[in-house]
Length: 261
Image (cartoon, rainbow, N blue to C red; front, side, top):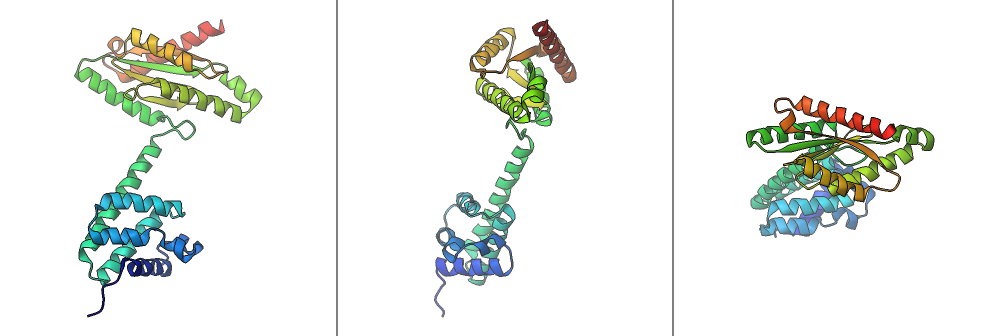
């Protein structure tokens, strides 16, 4: 009876097949030790029966650090499954299937999160913020809870963008977004709604909590950034989410008008 292959043997076989089939072409740019990386210890852990999901996360992080993309990582895992099949390592083979599922779930979740975020500021984008607003409004109505919507607009932003360039405009947007995010509670969604307009939903918010929120935000306001704000409360427009946004928007531009006067 031939001796069972070691985790090192199996890892080498996996790398060679991944290169031959171009399942992970980025490996071709690495030396043999780089190609193997943590793969032998990953295989050893699979053979030992360690928890597959955590193994998948750790393995994926290491492979990503070597420059492999998601498709290559998934491809290499599939190759490893075939290698283990041929070696009659059925338990480890099943664990690889769990690793594939765990990795795909992780990548899918990350992509969904990225799709909900504004690329410049990292806050919720327009669509995601309105979706969260709809959820929070429905929840507040169900439990007869309070909810406040505050909309913000950066003062003089267009002039800054025109006079000092988009790089300075982007810096101001990121600076305000950072202050807004740091001021909001974890339960209070904040987003960039487009251009220089931002929003915050204050769960259980009323006029006093909005005033306190704006005061805390003012203390964090970056130098050279000023904003106007308009707030509306669910109790004022209990039957339509779009009316809540319209009321906050109207008050925002009334506030901008007063600042300009």
